[in-house]
Image (cartoon, rainbow, N blue to C red; front, side, top):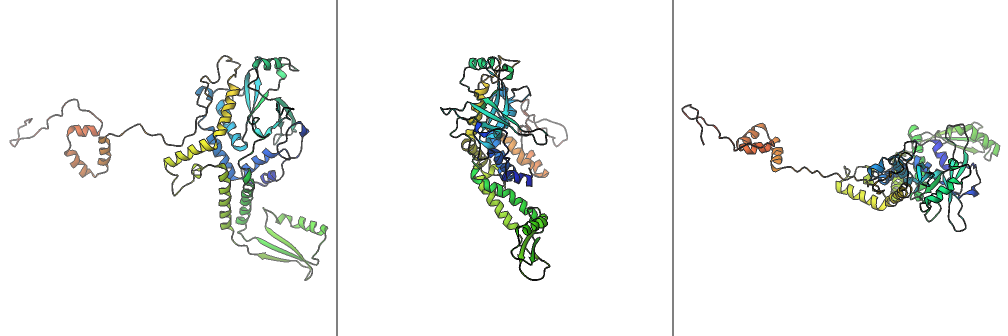
Length: 445
């Protein structure tokens, strides 16, 4: 996503308009737009975006180990578990949480499931015992549409420990009938220490915002040749009124800002009434941009804890040895994404272990009962083919000149030559024919 003024504005001021009293649920951030702001930061920070995407790849790994579960369809839209896993891994990497909307059949078992964007989820207020048994799904306005944001919908949380019979009874007695039942939500971070998860990149949010602004500033400097600096001095009054200053801001505003020329405006008490316009030669800041960007990149990557080797950057002229890649991969799997993977595996087990497809209610979605994710591996697969001594010798032979090759072959037996080309003799080597001095053909033993 390119760094645009709209993207920067999304960071500075998230939407404040509410469509429901926030007392109905627990606010996520002071303005209830905390996850939206964090996603906006990741979208405009090139380093943050790459870090989150790399982390998501490791969380997703090579998909679910059970091949049948991997390709199973989970809703009428045809979404598979493979497609769902990709979405869950993305939100785990960006917001450390995920959620599913679970529809229930008349037997009280899950019959379809849909991905819910974590940023649109809000937890209901806890009861006297501190238990949260319902959540709200925000319905934001779709960009480009003429409709308005809809009122958040309230849903009960999906409790895997609740007997299916109780869910079935709830559906049967639901106002409006089972068809009016809104479905239940399984939220991965309901069991956490706080209401909403903290992000590992929170300490470097300022760095991510600065990285985005730095790119815009550098673009302006490059376009102006690092020299489009102007000073305007207006004489007559060194303490102008607020009305005068407001009018000047409007007059010179098109030249000031991240996308305009660098203009400074000052006031003085005397000299001619005609303003002075002086051009200021600015130093070339290209080197400064480079060092600042490297510093910001280092700060952002440090909190994600992913070795630089796994971002595909050259190290001492190469990507590193296979052992280095394997060690770095194992570190990320065991120390960085292990918790995220287990959270998704837990979700898969509690939601889909009793899942009943409408067309195949008696066929389990995951026949093996293994809901684990296969880890991503970057180590090369060792070859099972072993070269024979003859094949190794043949490789050496092909590097020699034709004259030397002929001399080597003349010194070899028939069996050795056959070994070179991978053939076997049907019997003992035939006797080598010789020509006697009298010219008559004869065979020798």
